[in-house]
Length: 249
Image: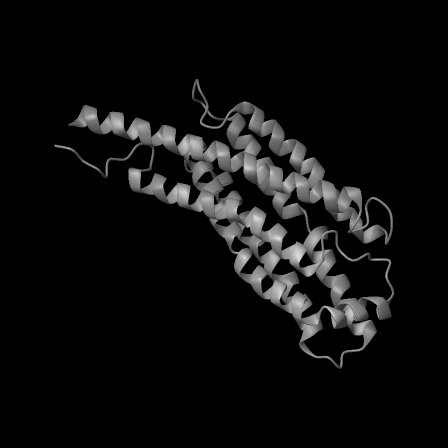
């Protein structure tokens, strides 16, 4: 008798359908995030070297557009939770019930909040028109320092994922070994975000080539690459499930 709920290594056909749903939701984060930042006129971001009056003027002139953008981003950021769930499932499929799977899951949850909280700080800066330029500048500084400067969480995710991929005992790993090296390179790339606390100008300022462009491009390349590999792994697992069902039948 055919059993459509048969499991292999703790998964099922239904779980793999959910896995692909999570991957696609996470992948959708990339173009939507970029589109919203273009809509707000923040690609690249306003310079940290701008004075309080200049920052306040930007927030005043583009008030409605920025508020709409931040409102949209509060719906976009949770897509990272889906991507984090997909990564966690993938780690569990590779190394089983390792503590590293929990590290991956918790880091993914925190990373989602690290996108949401700065967005609400910007909304706070925009909430009352009577805020002083100095207050608006302070809130803008706080938001950018949180947005790009807190890099430890995603670095933990990347390193944990690399370790899991390296420890795949299969003759043909679910995720190819080169992806582990990609994770480590991306971890190095995003680490530059932490340097924004040291300067207002130059390549490691929050609008600079290193701390903005390299960090953002590295992060998005990682999401796109891992999404492609996880979709391929999910279809492979589903094929193995089909063989198992046929054998059991």
